[in-house]
Image (cartoon, rainbow, N blue to C red):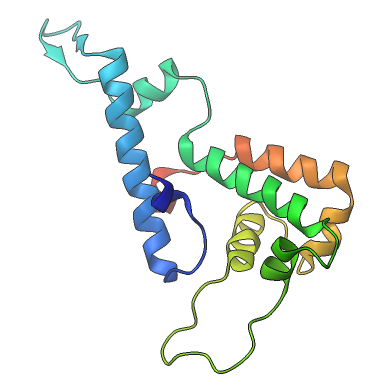
Length: 153
């Protein structure tokens, strides 16, 4: 599952597919936990619908959890000293010639996409991170963000 949670160095279209696979996996596990339900009208046993699963399970879904943790880690790394390797990897630009084809999506691009999804059009997220209280509000907003299934597919 760690491979599904990584945010960088992948074609942009594949992230939506990975998010969908994570949602399907989460629903499968929740269905095993909460088991089947007897239908009031027919009296037959049936699987719980996705809306019923999420009503029973009050925690945020796995995608929101991952996005919130990505933003929290990005804030931590962006506030690091510039000599630290993690900071140089996230903020720095690779040198040399790039391979042919579509450029790989950087981890920083994933952070910008998550911020844009929340309505933050701030281009310079590194400066935004320096205000811890404001950044913490974005991290919490990512955890509580409601993404409709139609937008994911």
